[in-house]
View 1 (cartoon, rainbow, N blue to C red):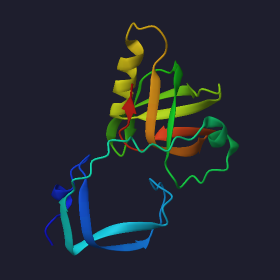
View 2: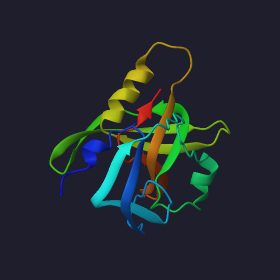
View 3: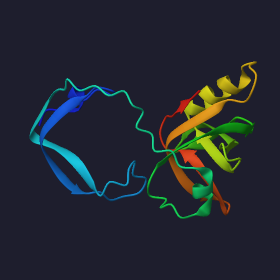
View 4: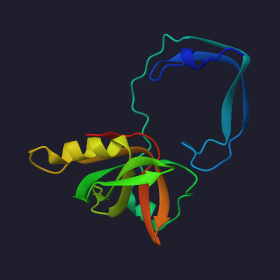
Length: 164
């Protein structure tokens, strides 16, 4: 079967016909949708005249994160002010060096949540924090994982994320 991925560029709007739906399972799901869509051999993908540039964020406040009621298998979107930024570390992960930094984010209700951030995101965050601008940077993490490290709840970036 020819790959249909090239017909689905990130950010493009498309009509998709002939696909299957199956129960969504597994760890670290990007949504809480009960079904996932799979492209099959006779799937048709065409351009859509509809364009909607909304961000489609589903932000979760830190009190909810800290309350422990969220299922950790669902990825969340969070935004907060960078309150402290730890030292940049290079850690070996699966035999490859990977950058890591620990931080604390504060939301607009003054709730704080610890973060462990990884990869290219760390470079972007460090660059933003080192700028000589008034105030502290705001960090948006899309598809963040909720986890525990040494018994403490924290969030971490599951994929490359955005920072402003």
